[in-house]
Image 1: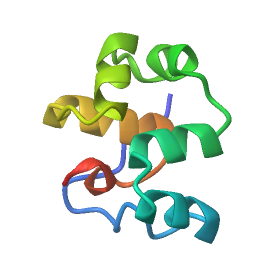
Image 2 (image 1 turned 45 degrees about the vertical axis):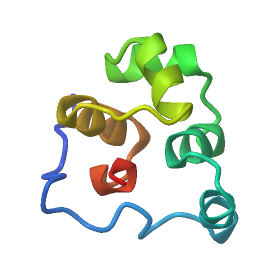
Image 3 (image 1 turned 180 degrees about the horizontal axis):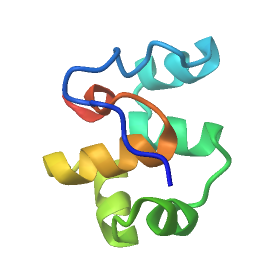
Amino acid sequence: MRTPRNLEHGPDGDEDLPEAVIALIESGVSPLTAVRQWRGLSIEDLAIRSGVKAFVIRSAEAGSELSPEAQVKLAWALDVGADLFID
């Protein structure tokens, strides 16, 4: 099992994202939604992969804040920096 990289001090969350994903985020789409869809994952798939409950993911995609623990788990599962999910 791979271990999460140090996400508190890691690279910028959008460092390796394709321009199309960045454009979606800049247009107002939730970063979590944009990256999840780019990775080809359903909310349920991401919940299983990350250990974060599906209702928490749905709430975050609708604008609710994520706990720091959920940010790290989701970032690890999506292979992005956790700072992508911080407003």
